[in-house]
Image 1 (cartoon, one colour):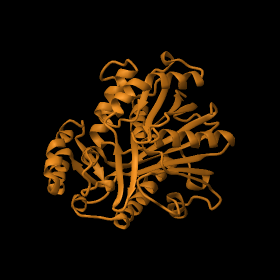
Image 2: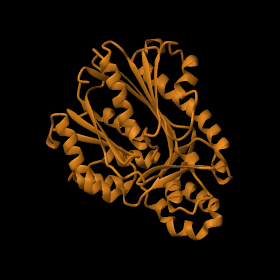
Image 3: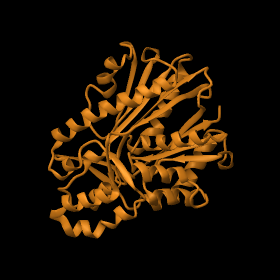
Image 4: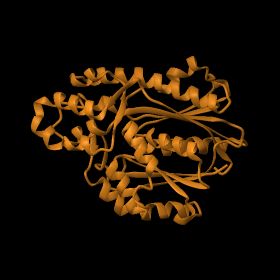
Length: 348
């Protein structure tokens, strides 16, 4: 993977923007039949570190009842639009045209698309009919890192090839008013929608060198994070143990990943992390013995966009690139499994 470069990065969000105060007021109305549950947990809106988010449907849509068909129809329409917007921007930023792309890796876990998203939008974007397609499902928040790593491995295996990576998540359509699970209220306070795309290839300077990747899967942790598939739609699985688990387990896991990459923690100038929530960011800083507030860009992205699942860490990377990428960066993200994905980036 050392010959593979990050050639471009682009992000996209849907047009509906809602402040956290507006989201809290709408959620109070929407959870009216479960007032005691909402009142007990409503403080999460105030303490989430979020100012505003972007969502794929008008706010009134979320106060209505919807089944699988309605939810997935919204997913398909929004995901196709976000995919095309982010992908087109990434290709243009790389100085390429769609016909130059040899393969595409697509990551999305918040809806079902068969044919997959890149098959739906590729022809109208101008992607070649012989393009290689690798759609990935089930990665959750880790998909931004593991999906980009997959694209880099494929590009590195074929010198001269250029691969497009796109991740789209519409977390907000999973909001469930019929659930008595506290996680349903927490998700309503955290989730936003968005997309990110990147082009990777080799032999060109690019924005950064991709130095390698690694993953850690903890056994017997499937109920920490994920989706339950139920009749009305996806139901979020959020365990309150996530922050203490990260604080306890992250450091040895990352040390093992870095050893696999031939590095030590001191060789990393900055960590670029998925900001799953304020408590998660705090736990990462504590686990890695970083000064509190070190992960400033993570907090900024969480404030401006909420938790968009897989694309979120790419929004952090976008701001890090704008600031000026340090000599060596380790991207990290947690996802269902429970898993941690890591990707090493080095200054070009």
